[in-house]
Image 1 (cartoon, one colour):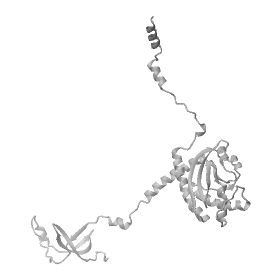
Image 2 (cartoon, rainbow, N blue to C red):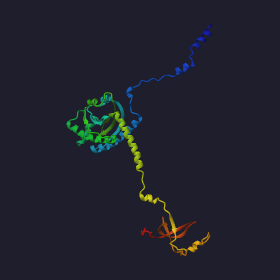
Image 3 (spheres, rainbow, N blue to C red):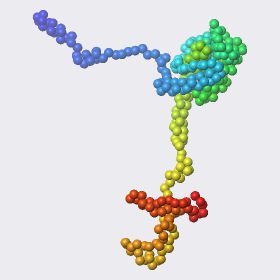
Image 4 (cartoon, one colour):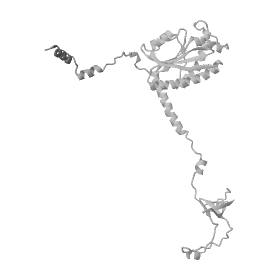
Length: 320
């Protein structure tokens, strides 16, 4: 075999089969999977929770405005889920943390307020200008009592937004949060950005993942109730309006006129029956057989009509 033929044989032997080429063209896309992402909020649940807590932010703004006597700005910052251990690590030191039992099977909810906001709030409640501390520190007994008086105000707005009744909350240490949840339990965190007296901080609501279904059911029930209420609020016409829409037989009649039987018997098509009633004597406009007005026969263009005169007394003696 010469050198040219040898090159042709080698070239043909290295050409892969078309089916093999197709398999080689399909490259697998393999990416690492984060098992911590399992059970994250669905898009629908996130939309519902966002709507609920945006409304809560609006109501809470009005309430704190009135309580603190200054302009308060509150907006929903984020909505996320994470294991309880991860959340505890993210809580800033000296934060004010209050625990609210949600009842079985939901567990407990948490309200967290950054220490950067706590001292301006206390100063405003004491009549000050909302000054903050230079360095974070633990609250004194008096300061803690002041915050305890404010927390029911915040809790009442949370109750209205969530549609649940919250028992009286109690302050706990951040380290004690791990005892309120299972070790690997996931919690949902709703963070609000508050601006009070020029100071910005976070107010966070934390609740178990199982409580999300409670809020979803509440939202669905409210939507269903809203549709029902909308049907119920459909304007029902009053009795007067319904009566005014009724059809009534109206006629223009001649007054009581006597005709002899002889004249009636002799009637034939084309005959003219003489009623012997003066033409100036008005007839009567009747509705369902009841006389309402005196009426004269007239013509309105090509149509017959009745010109109304004085109001008449009906058969029951009632003057209309």
